[in-house]
Length: 87
Image (cartoon, rainbow, N blue to C red; front, side):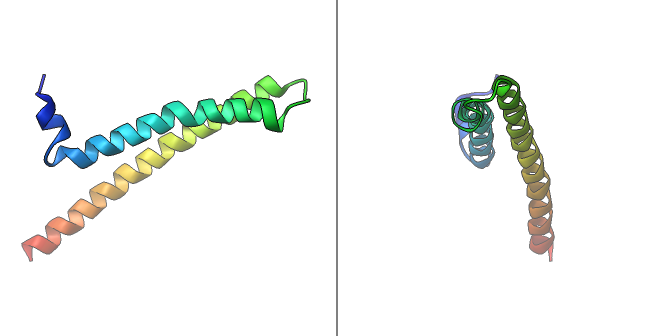
């Protein structure tokens, strides 16, 4: 197992920060969405539990899609930087 200085320092600092941000979003956003939809939006609906669950799943998938898009764009940005350095 690598020491923590390698994980949290140098080149890996940005990557680790992004990983923690998206992990926190993956944990907090669906739970917040579930309870928000359950107690505020669908307060009097008899099927509010189902709607709140579906909303939480949609938000979780949105976080995953945002992470994947960010990862693909990051690779493209690094490729552009490498090309400009070699010229």
